[in-house]
Structure formats: structure tokens, C-alpha cells
Image (cartoon, rainbow, N blue to C red):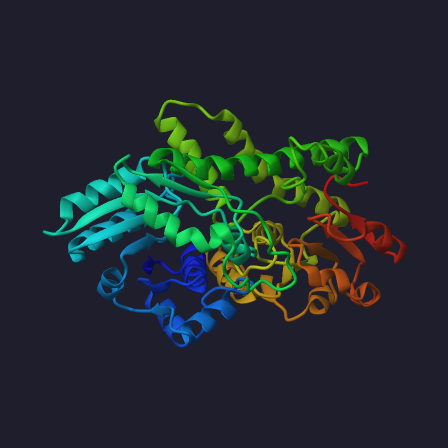
Length: 461
């Protein structure tokens, strides 16, 4: 099938690459010309495991193309996936201006039948507005069906999640869209039945057929926001229980394990820490709260989920202050700057939120991340400039050992696997004070205490 993907960010680039990998011919376009220049020269604008491999493979084999021309992209595809950004406004609502702009331009260019697929995370009823926009600006001979096809991929696992999803959700704007449903089934058929070579090494890719759920378009849009909000709720719940564990001396890891063994609950998203981040959960949670308010439904439970998550940095700073007493003048090494491992995304990163708070308290921070250093540096430079802070308050270093050198405290803020194999004897010998705050309960606290470290986690004795 000929498919166009408008937007080549974390959602769009994975969508384009994976659809090409399962056999379709795909054109990718983005309004960011720097991003397009990178892709056209074979460079990746983002880090995602396995993504670079399948992009290069499918470009070389002629299934994946990138173009700077919006018109070329629209004309090339009989199916057009809208994967543009929907950033939050100041009031928490999603900014849908890019979605509207793309929809209008599709209508102004197209002169035949197109299936327009809403892939970006959007508020309920956005699909109806896309359909109205297409109808209002369409040219003679053009005909459109609008579909909601929410993505459920995790950064750091996006390629695997796209090719091996728990479900595929397709929402139709009207019951008459039989052609659109048939086309979407055809697009996803290789994934539904697993008839493609899996590029994921070391994982069991054998599975039964993937459920293909067809709903009305509003239900599909709600499924996405409700799913993300529920997962965020699990994280905030276990973080609140971690605070209770701290008060009574219980171990949140054992509590979470006992809870997760209940098949009705499951073990996923029950890891206590310094809070969730990234561009999905915080943004989608706030947007869903605003959607419900506009509809006259008060989702106070989600407001509390948000408050608990925002308080995690306060809890973390309190634990660090208990370790160091005075933060002013202290040097702190931070291991991990991305919002989660296996990504270079620092948007809404709890690690950077914690670094900012420590700097505002007078500490100097040295940060290390295997992939996100460049993006973290830009983000922190903006923060320092906007707050008239000394530029040497934050430094990116090239290894965990450099982060530890001369530091009064080492913080584990993102659970990258490489931190498990560090030489902790070497780190202890290089620190001014051998103290560790493990914001993800990732390390072996007992082992570190035996080596002479002060060790503090989140909800662990």
C-alpha cells in the first residue's frame, strides 16, 4: 500500500519505519527542515532502539522515502497518517493547530480518495473536526474517510510495541466507512498475523493474532487518553504507598510485588520512584482533566494523580537534604537525564526537574546520560539563562565516573542498565562523600552499604 506519514517525531518516524518494514511503501514528511535534512542524509533525529536499523534497511530497499515537499507526500499516499505534535497549552489543553493546518493542506491538495488517519494523541471529537475541515476545503473529485488509530508505543520500546501490540484500535467517523475499515485491516494485516521478519534481536516474537478493535471515532480517541491516565494512576498510587513505607519502615518493592501478583492488577507500572515524565503521561493526563472539565465531569482522581506526581521531586529533595543537611555549595552527580531509559527524550524529565531544584538550592550538578546529554545540555542552558544562574551550575560529563568525581552525592535518576555494572569501589574512592540517593530503587542498596556508602531509596528501608 502507498502510505504517507506527516510528522517524523517519536510517533511518526516509528510509524513510517515500521509500516515500511512490514511491506508498505511509505513517504515521510516533516515541517522541520533540519529534521528532514538529517533523515535525507541518513541521520536519526531521535534515539530509539532498532529504529536506525530499520530506517536504513527500508530506505535502501526502496520502501521508505523522505521528502521535504508536503504536496509530494500527500499525493504519494492513498492513506495519510497525521503524526504531528499536540503540545500542551498553558491551561493544559492540547494545542491542535498543527493538526488543523495539516488537515486543511491535505484537503487543498488532494483530488482523489484518501483515508486520513489521526495518529497523534488528541482530545475526543478531534476526528470530527478533521472531517469537517477536510470537507470544507476539499477540491472537486476529492473524497475522504477519517479514522482514529491511536498509538500505544512506549519510548525505548516503540519499535517492539508497534510490531507486537496488545491491540490495534481503529475508530471510524461513520458506520458507512467500510472502505476505510478494510484498508486499515489490510495495512495492519502483517502485524495482526505476524507475517513479517522481526528486527528485534533477543526477544520472543511469536504470538497469537493481535486483536483488531473497531469502534466509533470518539471511543477510539477516549481509549488512548483513558489508557494513559490509568497507567499514570498506577504509578502515582505506588508512589503514594512508597511514602507510607518510608514512614513505617516497610519495603515498597515487596509491597508492589505482593500487589502485582494479583492477576486483576498485574505487576506493570508499580515501580516507585521520583515520578513519571516524558511527553505522553504528563501532557495527556492534564489534557484529559481539561477535557472532562469542559464536559462537566470532574475527574478529581486524576487531579490527585497529577499532584502526587508533582510532589515526587519535593520528596526526593527532602531525602537528599536529610543526607547532606545543607545543599548550598554541595556538588551532586546525577546519573540519567532522560525521562526513562533507552531514549534521548528529556521532555518533562523528572531527572532534570530534580537537577533544577538542586541548583536553585545552591548545589552544583554534574549530569551523565548515555544518549540524552546533548538535549539535556540545551534544556538546562535555557533554564540557567532564564533564572540568571551561573553557567557552571550544571555540567554534562562523559561518564558516570566523572559525575561521581569529587561529588558529595550521587543520584540515580534514570535506570539505564549500564549503571548496574559500574565499579562502585572506584566510585566510592573518587567521591568527596560516598552517598547515594537511588531515585528509582534500581541498585543493590545492601551491597552499596557494605561497600561503605550511605544509601537512600524511595520507600525502601
